[in-house]
Image (cartoon, rainbow, N blue to C red; front, top):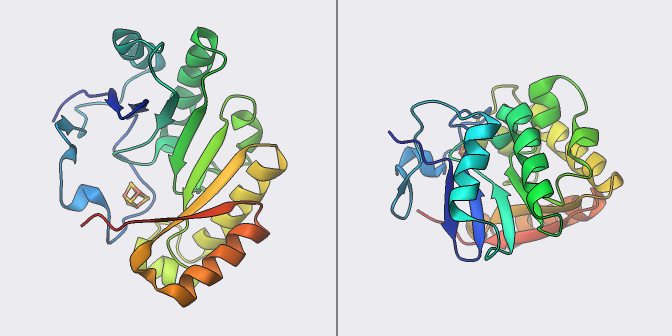
Length: 201
Ligand code: SF4
């Protein structure tokens, strides 16, 4: 365990708010590793926004080109901390793009439309789509909300895009051409672009 709330990777600063997630994906990195590179991302406890911003200030924002709320878990599980930390980052460097890497289930998790709270603070949401149908998504990601999670993910993307947030959806390259093409259509219909990323075993 550790308290790595913030870690640099390439030109970005990554923020690790929580180890909780509403999915339990077969391919989740948390099944096979303790973190990313040298960083152990299992947390002793979740940080508040002040602790996150103190860690951000420890690295500084002058040299980075992006801040990413990521994992080891689903960052919107800790939505109030995410919003407060994003406000603090925005105040420190208004020009710096802020992204969240998410499973897209924030509205389902919180039982309301939270995209209005993200708009103006978050520039990009990168959503793991993973599969072209609710059944395949359910079989692969085991969402605690069941097969309804898939449509909720698509609805979240549409709402983010409608609010002017840039939305990308991602699948892994082992999905196969036909399913990737179906996912590209789904992403386009939701106002998103599809990113095909390499599988990390
Ligand atoms: S959504 Fe992300 S953090 Fe959650 S189980 Fe899937 S891969 Fe892991």
